[in-house]
Image (cartoon, rainbow, N blue to C red):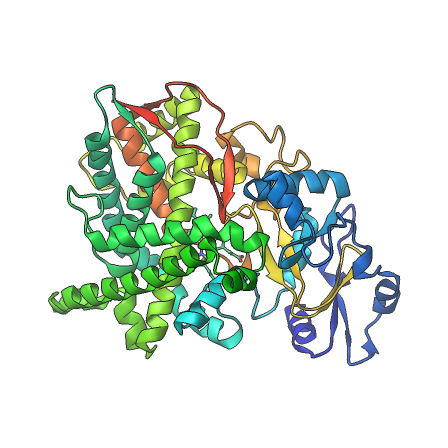
Length: 518
Ligand code: HEM
């Protein structure tokens, strides 16, 4: 079947039919294609009955800008996760909407999502923010794994998989990440006021995730959690924040318009990218210099930069890939941890249960925490999974169709973007019982057997899924263990946690918590 599907996908001019059986879930055998006018069995009927793209339901909007003005005036660009949920309820299993420069077809039924993702072929494509690509063109910089496509993407991706996803590599970065988690604890102690309060967890956790994530790339600490963090790394963080803060504006109106009018948002966006590239370049240089001084035996597991250079990527390609990987690593993990700590403070019973498990399997504050210990903690892993279900930082994901296709009975031309909604799927009662409840036990092996496949997709799926998943999960587990060992988290004013969209789903307000020593 795989062969047949791959053959269909690589045939020029073919139309894929993405269908699912209403009661039995996906039936792979029903995927068909027309190849150069030849019709495979049974396909003609389904293709012929498919409705045209224009018939996909959705808001009409205005010519050229679609619902961008509604979004700007109604202020819902930063609530796109809720907006998608409302549209989904209003229009049903598939809807289409043009917001500014992009027309998106949205699906959020796990079976439809499975059908699209399972047929994506060798070179899956995601929707790429036009402004990200434009900025690189203007700066004359290359695209890295996040933005590249086709053979070049696959080349980068194969190299990165070897360094970031392999268990042998995890053995190198786990102890360093554990040190970063311990440093986070000391750092938070220093940030506490006299009443034990720490304000703006977002900023603190941003530092931690850059510190922790970069150990997996550079095999060394940047020192961001120390008393005097290096200016370079602090500037990198500011540049990423600048890029993310201006991304919503680039989504509401075409970046070309922003550029032509030289808007403040565009200037900031571009400046963010320029600083990000300059700093990453300097960071790489510093790391390479330090690396030269290191001992020979450490060369067995070279850091990511040395490795990429050793496999003959040019310095420009290495720079572009490090920018892409670091850029994807920092805000995702830090905001997920923010949601996690806030949720634990809000649910003292859950926090105590987690603490009991941590004390049982990692009782010694001084001893290193290992992957084996983490594997013995299903509740801990359930907490993170539950946070990613309710607050997936990547609240939407996407695929740009390589071929004309039929999705949910509608003809979708090649090049159109299909939006997949982990946020909507994670809160749909058809997929999860009592979806609004935070219930880590639902992820225990015996309970999760009955969960719907593809309903939980915070890291995406397939060959284009998150290359940093192992790193992200490892660092979040370790940080949570260290925080639980050392602190009880409390909220001064118990508050519902509300998310907003700033390219990713992030907490709307500053997360402020009280840390009481255990
Ligand atoms: C909570 C943490 C994280 C979440 C929820 C997350 C989620 C995602 C998602 C949904 C995608 C798109 C996958 C797809 O299209 O199917 C992605 C891609 C990516 N992520 Fe992550 N991510 C996280 C952390 C990280 C970390 C720590 C790194 C780096 C160490 C990283 C590096 C990347 C890269 C480079 C890509 C692009 C991969 C490609 O296009 O081939 N991510 N991530």
